Image (cartoon, rainbow, N blue to C red):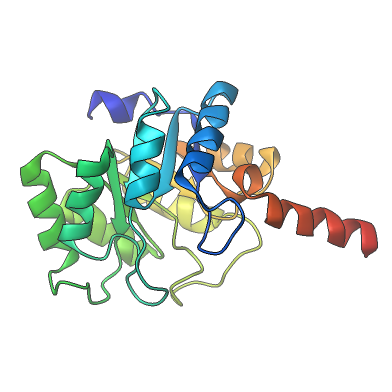
Length: 224
């Protein structure tokens, strides 16, 4: 296992992202939030877009997991080899990409994309939506498997919290592969449950870095 990845074992990773049109959608804002998360104890930062990756890499000392979202359907998380290599050039220590079997933007298969990145010396995180995706990722030789896409690809029912059932299945099947829990981890208790279920590390995004969503949660609780 690469030392950078080994350092993440048992740690919290924070996803720092804002979407187009949102008030916080600015690289400098994202970099400030990333630094705040680092001060709070984040062992790594996950972020998207070349500008954000570059800004955050220049602000934090912890590893940066970078991705590039393009589009809103199908494979939109780092959808091509070109996107992945651009993330590396922007400063990503690890590149995250969609590990589903759906068609990729450049026509390459997931395995072909991973092979090219591994030849470059790039560390790869596979965002999975099912056990089959995790199997595909492990077969391709990725460095990290995550449950990021569970409930978003149509392969599994979208759970209210993290998909701990999928997490347990993947951890049991691939004990030598770092399996990270990501997706709908909204409370410290859920993060702890993920670790108890065997997660190598836990990624939390919305519950820490997206005030609009957090506000809606409290509004619903207050107003009923």
